[in-house]
Structure formats: C-alpha cells, structure tokens
Image 1: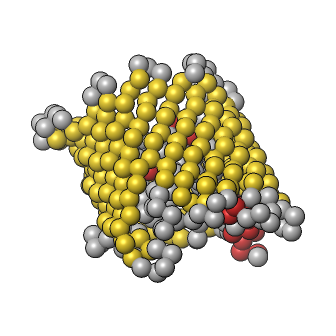
Image 2 (image 1 turned 30 degrees about the horizontal axis):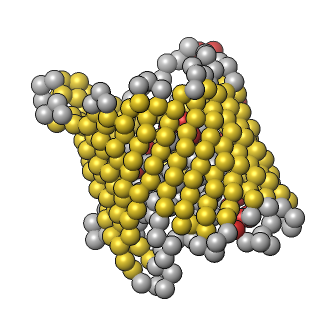
Length: 346
C-alpha cells in the first residue's frame, strides 16, 4: 500500500507541475518525441459495491517523418513503449462493453513499432506492430469518450487494439469522394505470428463536407466458440460521422457477429459532441451504447463527459457513466461510475 501511495503522489505531482514548468520556461519539446499520461480515478457504485479505484496508462516514444526519402517520398518511423497500472472498473461491475478505454490487466511492454511511406503516389503503406483501431472501425466523433465501445464495436472479434497491437500491414488510398483501407494482422494469441490472422477492409464515402459513412468487413481465422472449438469468424460493421454545425458533431455505429462466438451478437451506439471555437474552451459529449446479448437480453451504457483544458498540454475530464443491466441479466445490478481523467500530452 505504501508503494502504491507513493506512485499516485508522484503521478499527481507530475500532472500538476509539468504543464506549469513547460509554460513558464517557454520550452518547446521536440516534435519527434512524445509522451501521453492518462490518470483516471473512478467511484463505482452498485447496490452491493461502493468503491473508489485509481489507475494510469503511460505511453511514450518516438515519431519522426523524414522528407526526401527515395526522391520526393516521405518515410515515417514510429516506436512506442506503454505501461498500465491499477485495477479495472469492469471487474467490479461485470459488464461486457467496458466502462473505461484504459481498463485491462497491468502490463509493461513495447507497444506500436512501425514504418510508413507512400508507394507509386497511389497509396500509403504501414508495416509493423499496430493498433488497428487507429485506422479502422473507430468513429472519429467518438474519440473523446472514455468508454470502450466508443473506440470500436465489441462485435469485431480479434481486432488488434489496446492492450495488444500486433504485427501487420496497412494499405490506404484516398480519393476526393472516398477512401479505402485494407489491413492484415497477426492474431491475438501471438502478436508476431501469422498462424492466426485478422483481416479487415473499410470503405469510407464522403457526403459533401458534412459527413462520412464507413462500411467495413473483417475476418479472424481462429476464434474460440462457446463449445470449445476453434473456427474462423467474420462479419461487417458500419459507422456514420456527421457535423450538425461548426461545433456540434455526432456519430452512429453498428456491428453484428455470429452468436456462437460472442456474448454480444449485435451492437449499436449513438452520440453527440460539442467542440469549442478555440482550444481553450470547454468541450463535452453524451452517448448511448446498446449491446444485444445472446440471452435475448440487453446491456445499455450511457456516458456524459465534459473536458476542461487547464494548460496547453493538460486537460481534466469528468465523466458520468450509467450501465443498465450489466451482462443483460434481469437480476443484475445497475451501476453508476463517476470518473475524473487527467490527461497530459508532451
């Protein structure tokens, strides 16, 4: 306990002091070196559990673009290291969707390592260990929410994402009216082996300047069924990102999967966000995520957040999450989670 208290005190000191020091000294950090710290404290409340927890996730690394590589091409190098410490809110609730997008087992490891360039002036390519949700299946207008399904639909089984990016290749081509992305990755069980693979393709159609609609298909060659057998599984998903005005945006996502492989057979989510006219203003959002379970019941997640920028690289995000019928059970206890996330970007 003493060790944990020292860690939390140190992290709070870092979050509070670094932005002030950087601003006061007018230090400009090198663009090719980065660090991101998310420190989140939550109070979880059900009829039988009332508990506060704190955890953090730290990512740091190197990202550099070299110009004039093989003529007029650019070469991007990216390498990052990640560590996560602390308990998970979903372990207390038992929900299937995920209350927080930084909740998982504790780990310390190399994270994303990839190179990227443009080939034949037609498409961009990335090769290395990657988090596929940085390129696929994620609603752009849902990126500020802190719950799990806002990042990608839980029906997309095996997608390489937090906390385990895997070795793969991504090809992306962009035109005026649409863009196309295709990815092929190693599987969940071994992040550098292609005995099991995950493949995904996504077509994005641009609707004037107000919206983008995306259609995706995916396939994993080796997922466990409820009867214990291993088999291939695949399905589709859809995403709509739209702008209602200059500072109000929204999203809708939908996905399905074979119920022989997953507790969730159908999922949809909808949300609205408002963005400030300047970077110093408060932003926020509200959303609902609905999971249809194989037991013919449902789990619903609601989140309301407000993001307050305190310094150039430092923000505070209070969030209220309500989970109705975790795991869909008639007798399952509804949960309320009040969270405060401190984010520091260097």
